[in-house]
Length: 122
Image 1 (cartoon, rainbow, N blue to C red):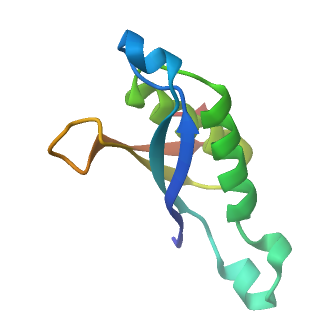
Image 2 (tube, rainbow, N blue to C red):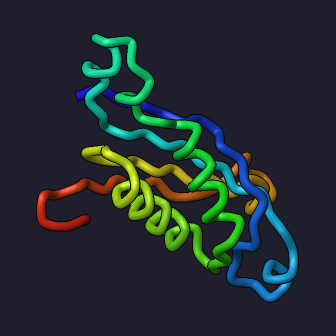
């Protein structure tokens, strides 16, 4: 299976468990990797058969901007389920980084992988 990826998608949102975080916008970064069969698009040079990573990026950005959560784990799970529900992918890997959350680290975060199934999502 082929992979389609979106690297370093940056979004400003309200995220964090501490009171001071609940009143500010912070940058989070998504690295997304989706399993998708690219052959139909490639064989016909047909954009309509490709995974629309621009639309996917827009949906992820919109969701992250509008849904304020405390945990990066929650946001990563929401994004994985959003992609599986709205795009024709077999799986998605979401790496969410919160830059500057720890003073002496470039960033901290989580990475999850979720799979689409014939009878629902998991």
